Image (cartoon, rainbow, N blue to C red; front, side, top):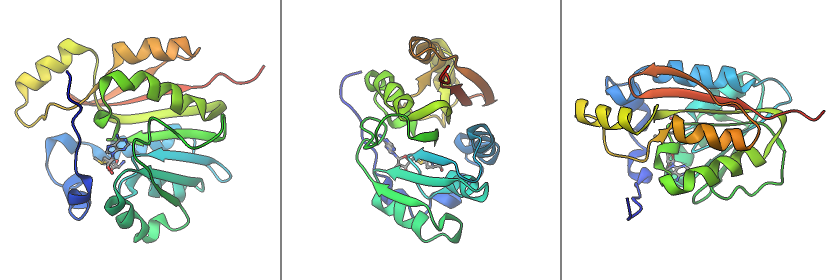
Length: 210
Ligand SMILES: C[S@@+](CC[C@H](N)C(=O)[O-])C[C@H]1O[C@@H](n2cnc3c(N)ncnc32)[C@H](O)[C@@H]1O
């Protein structure tokens, strides 16, 4: 894989919320995935949560309802405009940022949780480990990292799914067998639960201070 692909999410902003409610198999169990990510984040009053690739704010709305303070980052201004217009996103901070997984403009250990849904598969594979390190850097000790996305157990599972499902685009899917050692190197165990043949929720807790 050489040339890094880019996607135009501004174009998609207008129809995105209808898309996730459609019968597109890519978004099968979308609401279940977001509900589980919100639950695993531990969102509660007083919690500060970073939502990377927040898009139209569908996950953020769930975190806000649970009383958390939410900051949403996204490279698409039009997606952020959609979130800003939603009553359910009132009070969240929306920040336009290129490559928001890669360079987080925050000091170490300031968020109770860092979460993301359906965005990490836009990150170039060679950058994924650095992005994990960057996300974990800003999580407080004892805080959570939670990701819901199109993900595969390993390269063989990805290859089989791409051959089997003609509706799957060839994007930069994370592989659990490649992410696990990255978390191990940070002293964390990566947990996983599969929701559809192509969709998983992954989570890990940052070790607390002794
Ligand atoms: C499929 S939408 C998901 C939005 C929302 N998180 C959800 O679950 O519905 C993908 C979002 O990721 C953003 N995005 C695209 N490339 C990204 C990148 N490299 N880093 C972070 N976000 C990215 C897009 O602008 C878009 O808002």
